[in-house]
Length: 513
Image (cartoon, rainbow, N blue to C red; front, side, top):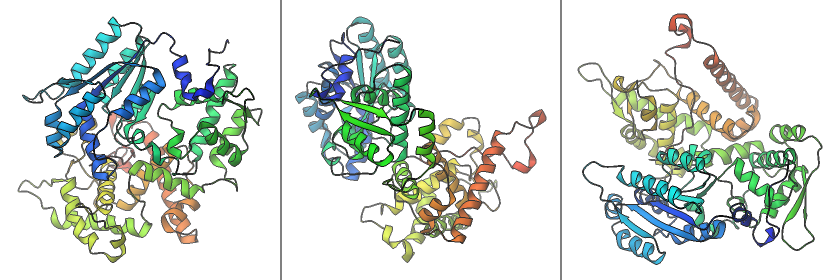
């Protein structure tokens, strides 16, 4: 197979390979979903990440990667969105920022119940440009909304490159990593200066990603150079960014993997282009990848327990508690639910998830062992955030029953950030066990093995026998649950009585308030 054309002067910026892959591109389209961006940037403001929304980092990144921006347009009701988030001062500053960065503002008033009018206008505009301007091959949409997936699919059918700018990784739907050719996060673009000081050790997930990309290139007959490897990695994971891991250059990222695994050798090219040659030290790449995932080497920067902590905090966006602290939270949740939630005259129980959280908070705030988690914010973060994530995880993993009227609509109901809880599925539910199941699910989604000793070290603080036995028992129950879900249904559509009411499989307990 003839290898694809690559830019020879890759050292002028390894990302410049992207521009070489689009030789007929006479410009890039940037379309901004104002209401989605303002709503999610309000979260960054509350976190203290930004004060004002600045579109310049987005324009600069797109120009650097794909060439000049020919279309810059925003759609939505700026005044309505700023007022809704109580950021009235953003109305003038955002309009001025758009003006300074040559963004054409399309004001679409949000009234009359036409909630998706701006979304539909963006789709219409993108398709109109795609069909009328054949030389424009890069379409960038600034939005974390998954509703644009059909648009992205149609643009790809037309041979266009799809670039998505999500606001944050946590607020961006996982399906967008598959829908995009390139995915960037606005939070990262406005905080690039912080990356060099981050110095985060590399989880094994990223080492595995590099080896998968290298193996694919070799199978395709493509020489292993830094530019081609980076491009292939981004094909496998569209939101990959080595700077988020604390590396200024791609070669620094690869050198770290070289020193920690000895699976690759990295040699700068002698032609002063800044590119590099990569050599796999094992002849059979399929024999190399499994040890990287399952075995621990003494020179690894992260222990398996530390990797668990990294991926859980990355997904949950809150600190990880000890087993005793999680146990206190779960006990308080069950006590508050049974004590304060009363049945109505018809015997029904209904309470909103956030209302239950507010009932539990006073008890946790009075606990001296949890006092170190009480912040100074109006919501007493991070304890407030931790409790919300625990409740949402329990809800998603099937601890609570759902309203009868919504049983036929499971997907919208699961995506509700403040769902209605109607009781426990079981008379005496083991909330702590369910909570651990949700965290096991997250760990496995990052290609990490589930082992009792590092789990005991993470949640119990030691690997003594009782702690390891506790985690071993939980892992056995978790694996048994997965096996039960894989078994075929009983004849005549009847569920196995031993399996209860058929709870949903564990899902990621990730949601934003």
